[in-house]
Image (tube, rainbow, N blue to C red; front, side):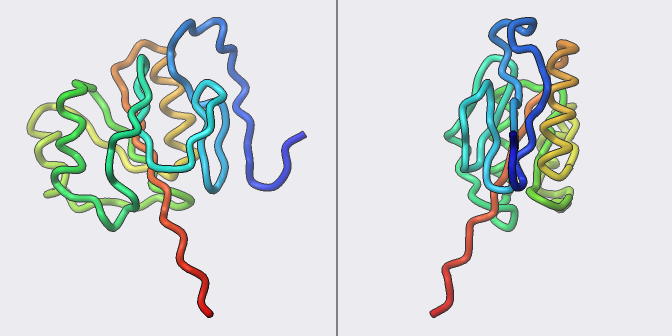
Length: 138
């Protein structure tokens, strides 16, 4: 039984072989092939990248998006947390100039959409952001 904000995703991993898919998500984490990540992560069919150094939406820069060019996707899904947020187009211009589409979604939608597209053999990347928690006020 799942409690709180954690949501199971019903997929058959055995049918997908070694493809990386989202198997769960919550307000403070995602699970990829049942491994939990509670920091920003980039997922593509064959790999999970934990070296994307973007800690939160407001720290996105042109370099944040240029990171994806070397991975050669056709589409980048940016999961922006509990609500959908949009970056300024100048930040991801290098991607669009390279013919790479960019979509902004809340994290739950990004996880679901990624799973559907990767199962259909699309070259898709899901970049999931988690907002840094504020320090408690004393």
